[in-house]
Image 1 (tube, rainbow over the protein chains, first blue to last red):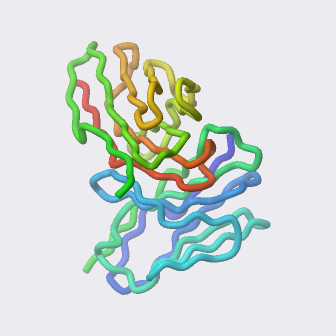
Image 2: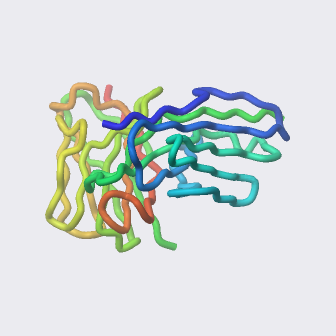
Length: 111
Length: 114
């Protein structure tokens, strides 16, 4: 099965810093999701991308289909952004079994 | 507001007992999924269902069972045959099978077997 690699695994930064989380995958995909998991465990979908770039508030997600790479950026980071960020992909021609997930990036923003 | 409700949030069971985790959605989604999350690992698929009265095994189905008698409900039973059941369990649903669009997660159930 396709492997989804995220980097870094862990990231600690100071409030206000610009944050970048990377995701790379090895085969063709039809869509890529960025998800946010807070300490309580529930997961929220941030973006679904198939090409280009999307922006929501301080969050920006980009994808380069040719390079099989996506990045999630957080501008003016804040302690409330502390969470695990998960990249997940929908394979081209994939079946009904849903998404393939990365292991997540654990982000801590210190005040 | 529409969403997925998982209950309970925390569950403790003795070794050897079966336990059923609840997942209910009011999004009118056809597809539903159960995932298991362990520390340092990505979400792994246990079972999925594309439609009522149909479900398929995922990557780690051994020791688990499901039913899909109603569109809204997809309960997961962790049986005594599951060798390492302590984990965080997430339910999800999507508008269409495969999760390309409208993928929604529940808040999870943390199961501890003692």
